Image 1 (spheres, rainbow, N blue to C red):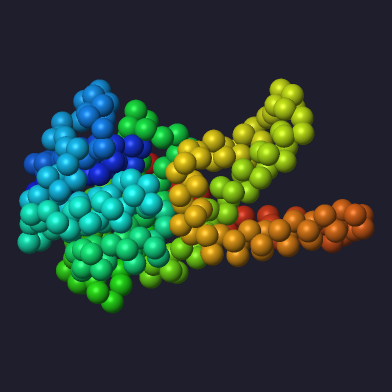
Image 2: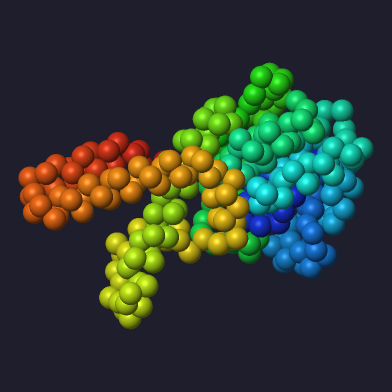
Length: 288
């Protein structure tokens, strides 16, 4: 049985909806709440068959909750944190989020919410958005990156670990800034490179889309992600992302130079190094 009583989820999108579905499936007896800015979101929540209290008042949704999860764009979290901090919070209330950027979020929320806030980042999602694509097994076998700080209470961290494990996650832990550096490499850079590839391939000849096969689809899939969401992520992790993009630009220049010199041996070595590194990426465990 979960130690949670009432879980308040802020933001009924893919991640928020998936958290709700997973909680209802895996944590019997836990009450679920949803907060959204607009009343119209309630109809979408009901359409997914999610039994949850619904709020548009951020403080009311937080009152008495044992766990609060921010599933909104990262740029909206400081404002929500301030509203939550002013609510009638339960003594054991723990607050976390699912944002893709942590340094700025932690620096904004920890002074307001204190030790009750611990950052989370489940590495799960899709280029699709909205509660209509949410699913209960989204977090199964996914890594969840927790970002405790020196202010974090050990018992609160252990409780948050237990929550994400109950949803099926594997737990990794980093400081907020180290998280942002690592995620810039393995999430934010690949997304932006998919965007660059899409633009470079199709801007000059949109009709080439008729020739697209699986390789192009696989390589550029994430470029179909929500532009508004990814603008917030890129701006929130701007220094780390700029550094990684500069590294990528140097690597691309290296490839151009190899081709200009027609250096077949060096090109083969370049490709072999990439293959060897890619081969070290473990496949996702199969779902039970």
